[in-house]
Length: 80
Image 1 (cartoon, rainbow, N blue to C red):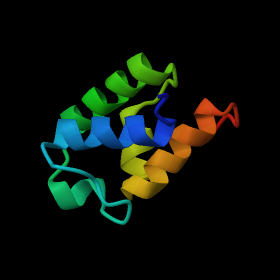
Image 2 (cartoon, rainbow, N blue to C red; image 1 turned 90 degrees about the vertical axis):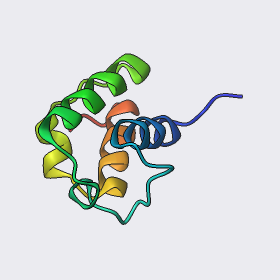
Image 3 (spheres, rainbow, N blue to C red; image 1 turned 45 degrees about the vertical axis):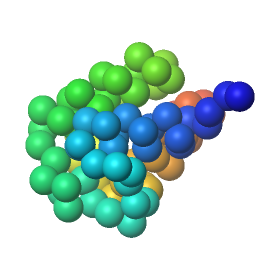
Image 4 (cartoon, rainbow, N blue to C red; image 1 turned 180 degrees about the vertical axis):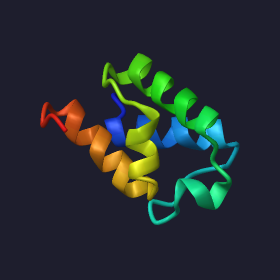
């Protein structure tokens, strides 16, 4: 069974932040996210999905549902 980009991103974010699962309405900052964690998240997402991101992408889209949507859109070829 193939997992969606959204599921992969959610799992990576939860793992790096050390939480069970993300709530799309939560902010990255609600979980005391740091710039180093943002870098780790972006690197792991790129390895898993091929979508290149910068920590600024996460910091500017800190609501986790918005970040997942951004990655999914870029994965679908919508640029960004």
